[in-house]
Length: 352
Image 1 (cartoon, rainbow, N blue to C red):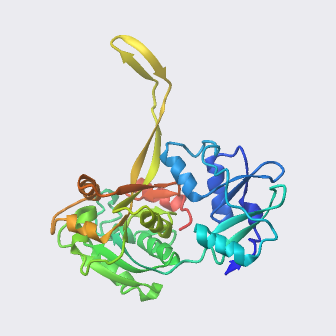
Image 2 (image 1 turned 30 degrees about the vertical axis):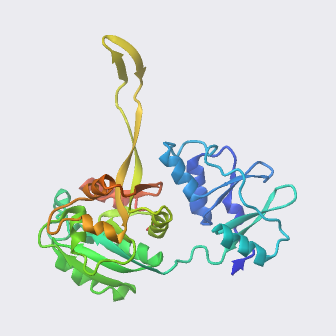
Image 3 (image 1 turned 180 degrees about the horizontal axis):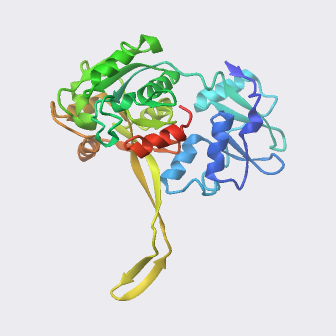
């Protein structure tokens, strides 16, 4: 069923000339999964979705870049008088959840939404959380507490991850545990307290960020999500999963754009001649965010009872001609690996 128009559709309007950061803010604040780009008279210029932003970031654009190159200039639109049933059919055929409504002058006058846009679709897919690390760099915090149980904003990091995934339709969790794993089991039990099912993979020896997956029994029948138990992020696990399926990938890795500025002017030379000088250049690269989606058949690439990390698994898949892709993130993300990260998580804790 279709709601005739979003009551807060004006919050999705974004003036042309905005930046990608403005578009991200618009998407987050309106929560309508679309930004409608308009001129000063509310005339439609185009639309931007989360996918458009991710593709832009993947091309090397930064959050301060103009939206100019990521705007979809000829989006599907409908007039105000179009029947709801017809709009619904257009959405179904084109597999979209939003259609701007424009008048005869192409001024935006509304937005059609598929019913309950924000409601979670129940997911049968398994979510595996790696929670067995020693947390050596986090000592003394981890001397008597496993790192995933360290509290942030009043509850363990692991609980934040589970609750966020549950809100997006995930209900089946598998926790890979080792160091002080009994404490994790005692806290979460079978998951009934959170309305989910929780089982455990117990590592006798440290198996790395992928090795524990070889212990999965039975093997999943559907693509499954894997995340490190010390990663706090606003990523939408459901959208990551859909992205993986939509791209027919064997393995998908969430990546985060990391920027750092060189503290000095960089001199480029040829022999003794100066070619050019860059004053404190900014370097950009994508880093592994510690969240993945895998097809069940990739488990056959994992050696049993052997330490094995995710980058090695992706290398093996790629060498065998399997499709491995990245999911570029723009959401807040923090890998809580050091005491300074833990302090930051407590001070700047974003919504989870």
